[in-house]
Image 1 (cartoon, rainbow, N blue to C red):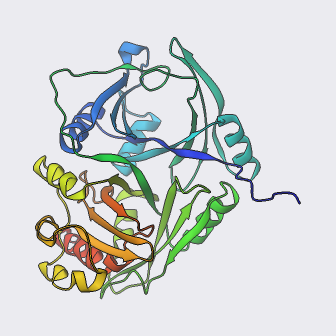
Image 2 (cartoon, rainbow, N blue to C red; image 1 turned 120 degrees about the vertical axis):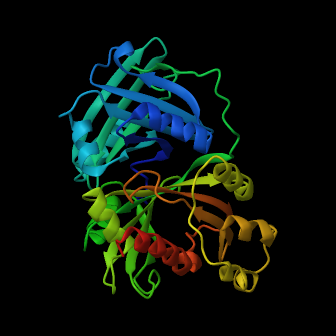
Amino acid sequence: MKNTSVDFLPLLGTDHVEFYVGNAKQAAHYYMSAFGFQAAAYAGPETGVKDRMSFVVKQQKLTFVFTSSLRPGTPIADHVMKHGDGVKVLALKVDDARSAWEETTRRGGRSCREPEVLKDESGELIISGIHTYGEVLHIFIERKNYHGAFMPGFVPWTNPYFKPAETGLLYVDHCVGNVGWNQMDPWVKFYEEVMGFRNILSFDDNDISTEYSALMSKVMSNGNGYVKFPINEPAEGKKKSQVEEYLDFYQGEGVQHVAMATNDIVHTVTELRNRGVEFLRVPDSYYDELLERVGRIDEDLAPLRELGILVDRDDEGYLLQLFSKPVQDRPTLFFEIIQRKGAKSFGKGNFKALFEAIEREQEMRGNL
């Protein structure tokens, strides 16, 4: 019998996340000093790229790229003018970038970059890509025959005088997208039909709601579970939800947050906080009945309470998580730090406390 469940888009994980920003050099230094990334690669006028500067920073399996325009009126400059600093590219690592492009475009994906071979003395890299929600792109990267600092066109970038902290961040756990009213299901269909993902979890406005606001979310995952993209849309509430605030200030759909995994969240959050990263806080009362709600955990409760770390349990284990405040002027992109102790879920039991904390921030901004 013919096997009809073959994964037509096998993904090896997240290759990198590229941000379009107003000042790439300063953004790169912020993520190095605050999050513990290390300088890795650079492209700009000195490397023959005349219209932009890109700085690449790395930490374990995390690779972030910060790109800014050198002139006004370019697509990069226009993107930053409209959206502020934000995620432009979610790049996915594949074994075959040509096949990835052919399979996704054949199923209705809109091409943003036809397969192209890039070469230099470090080998060859094949790149292709398609459009997704808002102005976000999925770029497919085939780098099995490339051994350079990042990709052709980039040179190694080092700063021998900078000593990054060991913050313990490991890889991208998931990336969350915010889409407009009634757009969640169409984008769920896109990921199912164009990319072969499946919906592994769904949350409605009864799951994710407070007294004032609500949202809905569906979690999309590729076949091997290496790539997960939850998709949020607003839901009716008494006041403006966090997704509505994002859409207003980002001027459209985009990546709301990137979740970064760690094996020791107490160490990671302590390091990040000491280096200036600001996190949301839930009331101390959250911890009064925490162990009754989630059961036995390996961690001491005192540091979790002191750092504001949240805990939730599912059928397979538990997880610990914490969310940063927005990392740029606009209340848009933020980061999640997550440690999984068996749990495959996304912290449903924390939604109410978390979103009430977000609402307190919204109220201070006058946007609730």
